[in-house]
Structures are given as C-alpha cells and as structure tokens.
Amino acid sequence: MKPPIEPNKEDCCNSGCNPCIFEVFEKQLQLYKKCKENDEILMTEENGISQLEYSSFFISDIVELTENLRILKFKKLRTDSNTKIFWNAGDHFLLKYNDGNMSCSRAYTPIKLKKSYLDDFDFLIVVKKYSEGLVSQYLFTLEKGNETLWRGPYGHYNVLENKFKRIIMIAQGTGIAPFIYIIDQILNDEDNMTKLVLFFCCKSLNEILFRNELYEFKSYWNFQYHIYLSDRWNDNKNKVMYSEPIIERKLRADDLVEIKPCNSDQFLVCGSQQFMRDFDHILKKELCVENIVNKILEKIVTI
Image (tube, rainbow, N blue to C red; front, top):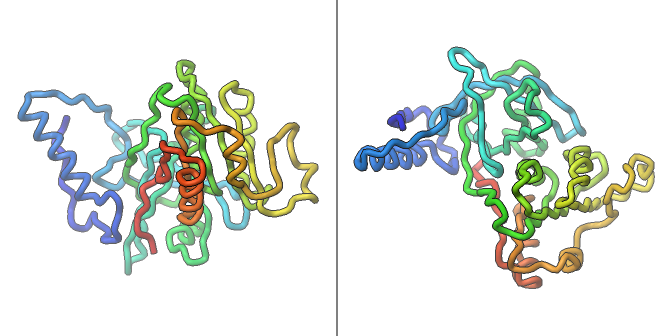
C-alpha cells in the first residue's frame, strides 16, 4: 500500500461533504501506519478514480429522457494511465461544482451494466433537474465534450452472496440508480441464489428508468418486479410491453404484506427523504421488518 497523499486546503469545498476529503485521508493514513507497523503488505488494485483527489472526466454521450430527466455518460481523460475505473454496487462518486463564487459537491450513483461492459464510457449517472437544485441545473447545461471533476468511490453497502433469502427493493424515481447495479451484479453471479423483488414507484410511463433493462431481467428465475404509476396512463396502454408488470396506482402497505416478509429478507429503500421515512415506518411498525437499509447513498449538503 502506498502512503496516501494529503489533500490541499483548496481540495475541500467546505459544503459538508460526506465523507470529507480530509476524513478519507485520515482513515487511509491510519490504515497505512497500521500496515507499516505490523510489516503487512496490503495489496490494492490501482483505481482510475481516487477518493483523495479529483479526476477529470468528459461527457461522452447524453441521453435525453424527459424534460427533467437525462442520462450522462462519462469517460476519463486518460493521459499517462489506462487504469480502469471500478466500484462496488451501492457506491457513489462525488461531483465537484465550482462557479467561481462558490464550490460544493453532489453524490451520484455510477452505473455500468454488464451488457455495456465493452461500450466506450466508464460510467453513467441519472440526473433529475430540480428547480432549486444548483448542481442538477448545472448538469443540464453540459454538452458532449465538457469536462467534469469526480472523486470516489464511497459506500458502506456490501452485496453478500446468499446471506439473505430475498433482497426486497423499494425505489422511487431516480432511487432506482443504486438498485439497478445491485440487481445486475447479483443476476450475473451464477453462485448467488438470492431472490430479488423490486417495487418501483414512478410518476408516469415516460419516467420509468431502465425500463428495457428491467424487462430483460424478468427472464431470470430469481427476479421479479412491479412498477407503480401515480399518474393515469390510459392513453398510453398501447406502449406497454407484453406481461410488463405496471400497476396504475401508488404502492401501498398491503402490496408488501402479500410477499410475506420474514427475518431472512433484507429490505432496501431509496427515494426522497419523505418516501424513505414513510416506508421505514411501514416496514418497522406495520410489518415488523428488521433488516432495513434506507440509505444506500450517503447524502451530502447541496445548494
């Protein structure tokens, strides 16, 4: 293990990042000292993205989904190194925003599914534009070729092979981002027998993220999903695929009761703060569920 390089004061954006770049440095420094004291050699694969310093990535492609939803694909500006970018399912990267007057960071889930492994990009993110979201507004101004600064990966969720009988995911909107990568990883692991159940809450048919991918995943024996739409879609019923599990109403507690939750299940919840609070209450108070993870992404302060 190489000694970590201490960040400069300018590397801190002073916006309450979680984790702060200096906290990451201290943890890596302590690990390095411990290994050195015990004459241990910690072999770590070199990653093309660092937790301690920002790396430049340019936008290689943009996919416009709706007026307020887009997918951005990023590729590293490689100069003297062709080191690959890697991360674990559930991890996030931090994007640095700086307009000259202020600086802040925003967490996004990096995604690259197995079927896109050979495609010419390192990772993609899903961006939803918010009227008062400084960083999301900025990301909607970017064009192909524009450079951005990223560091990471960070995260505390681990996919443990066959630890749980089922992993039940409840997602709202862009909250599907960390789950789609987890699903892809488990389904492509022949030794992992974990059953996966996804409840996906969307506003409309046009806002179903990774719709084709989910439909393809349906062919796996250990995956099932249900999409709940809050808006009426009678005029678009001809756009529904064969046996696509779309339900024209909001997700309710009794929908979860039907799958008969037990202590051998793990529940993952990702969405707005209110959405996670609501389903955390339902799972704990009404269904008496124990294994709940409702913060796949560590939230940071954004302006």
